[in-house]
Length: 239
Image 1 (cartoon, one colour):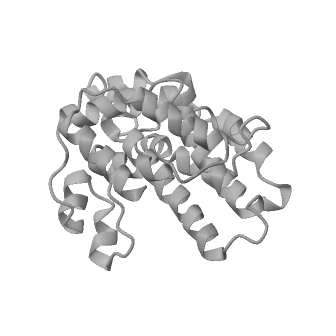
Image 2: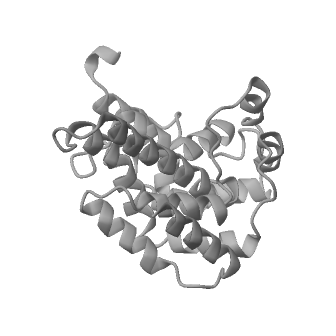
Image 3: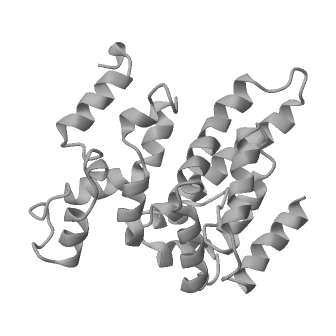
């Protein structure tokens, strides 16, 4: 199956205009059924088409490179060239659809608890660990790809609020909700979604921030609504 997943990833690199939505929906349905093996397909697609390669062991210089942009990280990690813009744009469009992007994010995040607490009795611990690591690595790749700065507005429009992610319907852990919202938290910290916070009014960055949806603004740490959501979700002894 790993070889098939590798072939699928390479196929979309060579044929960027090929239909991808059906394959993503298939993986979503498999996750809904409790099967995580198909996440290998998403991992290969994000690696080869999205340019989101994960390096398991890094040195101190490579850790510092994560504070920079994509070019610095790729050069430091020796990851090679970035995939063509046309290829990545086609994947981004497929993942931003309502029936693919958010369900894939949420279901991949939910698999962590499913694997830890609802695995088959007597299942080998090594297999359980591999399933957990696979879900975690794919989740990191999805957040990295969908939350890139150039497409932050689209990601903000797609991602629900912190309270919704941790609510009864989605039931994500607070640390995972913060992980999904990390790109928006970073933007809110840098700009506070206001031109006055280090952004020149009328500039492209200012217009991007002002054009963000109301949901994206709720991820600002300065937002009273965001603070109320955090207070309501986290246990009282946290404070």
